[in-house]
Length: 251
Image 1: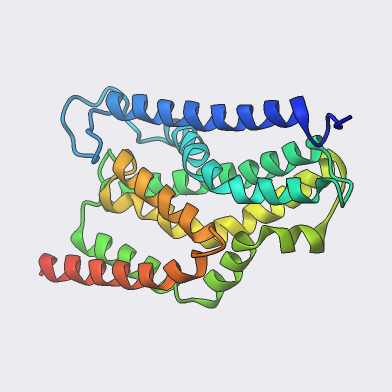
Image 2: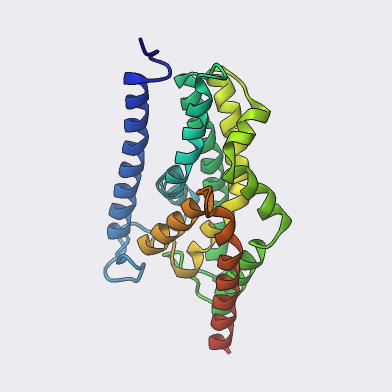
């Protein structure tokens, strides 16, 4: 008979809860975009009924955005944990711990970028919708994130995100607390790998669902075993080229 901790009802409930969280997060972002008076691209089309200018208003938005964008990228990681559950004495509670630890780190990053958005707004580099108010700022951000794609830090962090099974083998801990610790570690590497794509929200507007969708899709592709290493540097080239184009247009 199948164990509840590794198969059957426990697995079904876990995955249904996981996908429900993603769907609810995207629905929440859609509603916030509508209330902010922007279209799918992030362009103002109506009155902003939900100003995002204080940390208290920004942090919940960024936390929900982290769930919408980053939880889908966790699918390979959670599947890798499941593959090790039978052979390494893992549990469904540990699986949930990995998920929680991962989200805690991204929520912490959400707090950091919320604070950064308040500063950028105070400095006049972005407007109330999180859209770059300076062509030079947008160009610099694109080029910096593009160059980061070629860095050793990106390579190291992407290596862990791309092969989570190896991380589990080297850091295996059992139970919920063990899963939580591994999730925190994996989340830290993931932030190191993907922070730039979150920062690029300031180029087109942090409420742009189009940017959110494209960034999420690319981060998922980066973690696909067959193609992950093949898309990182080409994306860097595209971002640098985009940054240079924006700089030239700003002259």
